[in-house]
Length: 397
Image (cartoon, rainbow, N blue to C red; front, side, top):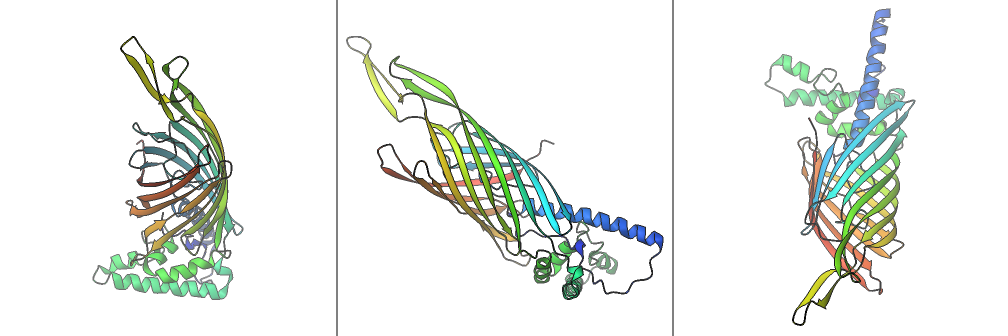
């Protein structure tokens, strides 16, 4: 998770009131070409920040967006699971509206040695076997244009000048030519984005100007995610008095929606999940005589795995805490509460993001959980979980 989503100031940080020389036809063609390039960069930059910011959470959550392939590993004392995710996205800014599509492919598997019959954390997901998931998320929101408002435009230009002065102060002693290049927002090494330059050298001014671009203060999203699971379950056949196994197919389908706040690294997500899962039955031990003096005993799950249906509602909040001179996220938390309507179970799952990757995005940390379920006799059982997780960019090249 990064500290914020931002839109490039190519939408207009400059003051439109500044006098300009009379343009020639050639100048107009160059201007139109530059404006089109700036628009493309703006589209790419906003889209990139949406998918690499607060929306880029744990792979097993409803909302998951990434700016590239990612491998995530989660582990508790007894169980371990790995998830490989591929996300593909594309966005556009047109007539004051931002729209973006995100497509997701995930493959997850429980590592050898995983013994629990429940998901690592929370109520959703599968404990055993291999999962394949397909997902789609649509993001949308309104984009403002400070150049159409004189007060906002003049303030944006003033904040830009402060950023230039701060850049010069920070680089005192360097070669004047290097300073002139580094402190020119139009040519500095910031992907051609004045917004990135402003965020680096005038963070407070950036936050104010940034707010001008999002009059609704939110980016909304909605989506669907479907998962298929195949797992092998061993069991004890009492009639034949032998150990046996069977392969079962389970599924899970989730619809979700929520908002990303543009003035704070925060998101809210609500989801509803329907699933069919299989669980091994409780083990039993049965003995039978082999001869007059010997007895053979076998211990195993009592019969083939049982099918269980669930309907789970969940609500999640994500927030990143930013501090330090660079105002980057140093800590993030993403608590989720969920309730299974069919089985009268509930869970609390709290990932705490502590470890950044080489780009500064928080990708790993500690995860706490509590699950409360009810057995066939109506007795409630509470279980605490504690584990670690980390995610790293993945590439086959």
